[in-house]
Image (cartoon, rainbow, N blue to C red; front, top):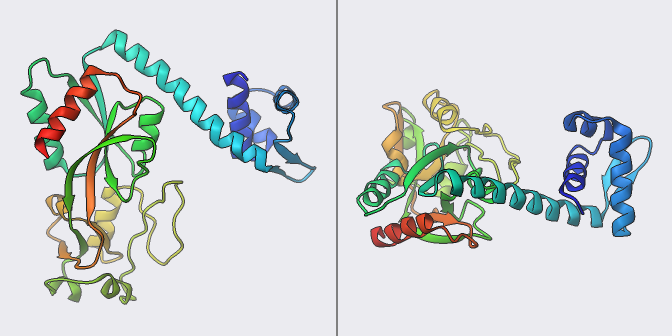
Length: 280
């Protein structure tokens, strides 16, 4: 199989519409249809069920979609990391979501900078859940991620910090005066629904709370009294005067980790991991 064929197939599988897929790829529909048919003949399986009204993935098509995405990410990663190794061999890209524990990140960066021959580190701020994707497609060499929320399967990790979770509330809300809360306390507040974070596939759990896309949006909605959130205790560092943080006694603890692809042979990555292990 060629990466071009896989890219064509992934686009059709995501759109489930040949015309839209062709438009997204910037090609005409007939050659796209022929390419998919050729791929099916080569594999000897039906990947897509087609009729005049719809396109649907078969079980075999779903398997290939998952595998093709991984292959395309790996190809992109190989290209990016090879070019980066040639142009900036002693430089790392570290992905972290905006609003993550910046004090911990600063501590790690300062400790690493003090090491002899330390690599230069470029910090890439990203959206929630984007770190895994950036590691897989080569945009990042390492990433700050959180267990149990982020998808850590397929990565090597070094634990950095384990901390309690807190409820972030509007400062004027009655619950903000409490010294501690339980998850059940949060579920019983009809006028203040809990904010909903995207799952690992980008979708949201159903519920009354607003869908959250970034930290700035969340901070504004909490300050306005439209929602509350459950976050790591270190989130106190970015709270406004209009916010209050109350410890949760029964919420699972969260561990911030440094993650990297297991196949990495980068000396710069190894150096940063050693620094992280000493900090822990």
